[in-house]
Amino acid sequence: MIRNAEGHRERLREKFLAGGAKGLSDREILELLLTYSRPRIDVRDISIELMDQFGGLSGVLRQPPEMLMRINGVGKASAVLLSLVFQAAQRALAPAPGMLTLDSVEKVREYLCTKLGSQRRERLVALLLDSSGRLLGEREIETGTVDRAAVSPRNLVEKIVYLNATSVILVHNHPGGRAEASREDRALTARLSELGRSLGFRVIDHFIVAGAEIISFRECGLMPGGN
Image (cartoon, rainbow, N blue to C red; front, side, top):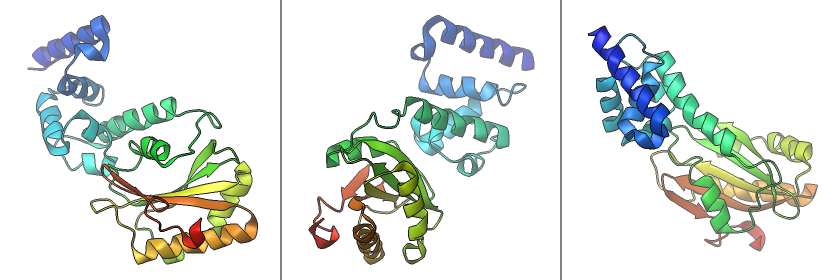
């Protein structure tokens, strides 16, 4: 059985070498990845279960390791490998600081569509911009179950000063929920906007991401003080 599995793995490798990923189905890509973390067993059934559970290759690769390890046969090594593939690709394809301009709601939506929608943990992120709307960096402010009232303004201010940013776009996700602004979301936006007015930076928008749904406070008329 090991001999047959090894022969199958070698055929997958040869298909990839001959035609790249386009020569493989999504399931075969996942199976080939798994052969590097589970080299001595047939991983076809594991790849099928992963695809079924998470809705395809994209859904699998976007999962955090702890979600992947809930699948029978997926251990720490496999979970780290699969999560790492997606995160490494994101980093490699990310524009260099100052090369991306986020000067419209649609551009921000396009940037965010692959960032937070599939994540299972809540995150509050700041997109830090220069005076021309160029993205200087993306910095995490809080992660886990974000307590809006406990968010530290100092954490945000330190990141703004470090990158010499002049404006901020707040972003957070609602895992498994809807893209709707809660009272706490509005209060946090108002608190950080007021802080910005006193320290010389602008909070120009706040986006909420829930799966494929993304809303903008500015677009919805929710930014405090008409910002």
